[in-house]
Image 1 (cartoon, rainbow, N blue to C red):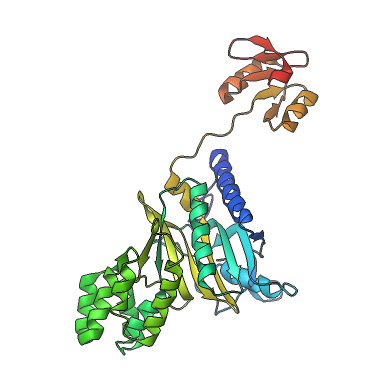
Image 2 (cartoon, rainbow, N blue to C red; image 1 turned 120 degrees about the vertical axis):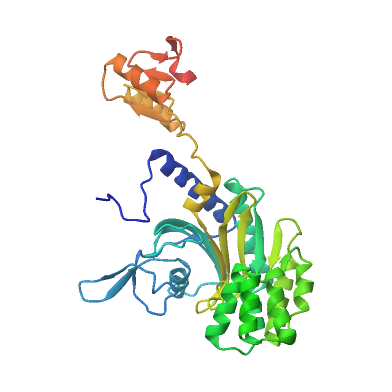
Length: 376
């Protein structure tokens, strides 16, 4: 019999302390950029039009109302903004909390219960706002140990416009989109052959999967912008690109995810030695224009590797007053649970605690020397 459901996990002290530290580091960065904390209910009223309606955990309230566990933050934060009394736009908000989905995302390696930290910039739609989110995402990754992370920027509207120029049925376009997203050239060739897409349109679709690289890719994309919609999407990306330094920013005009959700620039951040995105986001509209991103804490932990050691307490103390004095200075002190000195010394050795504070003396355990309490 399993103790916990599939797709969930326990967090022992070392892992949970690490998760708290990462969360605090990210929140400090967001705070410094002027993003205010918010929280939304873990339980939401089920809405069949919700982006995760088919993946959410559903339950029935006592009055028969169907509820759903929060599966993402973007929608609920946008709803929260609608309740603010006369907000001054733009509104900058940040959040940290747990999300739940019924099915794992194999592509993203995501569990069914995970923790997310994110930021939303709501009420404006400008290149400067998009660039702010991009810089902010990179600074967050820098703060938690990814100085070599790079951001890949795309625009689903560009892919959508090129694919719609084929004049195929929506189900056929969806298959093309999947092949483009996977950058599967042979599959894409086969589908275009099957659907008899020819000429300039065929070449434009085929070139989508190769539009990846530095800012020069935008000029290549201009060659296949075969509709006004494609040209408009490309201009949006160019306007953001003009605000970015060349370092750490790449462009992928073949990103084909989120075609029905994102309304502008989208991005993901990667580090060279980890195959999954560290964070991602983009521009959307949830009743008002907005742009944001999110970071999965468990994803960061996996990418960083082994958890750092727990912070060691400086002492075990039988004196409450002495312990409180050290704690007031920011020291970590364990309160003694017995007056048996041998037992306390054994525990201190097991935990790596360097000092034992007794009622009348303080002992340095490495050599048994007596030290002054104020020297700790």
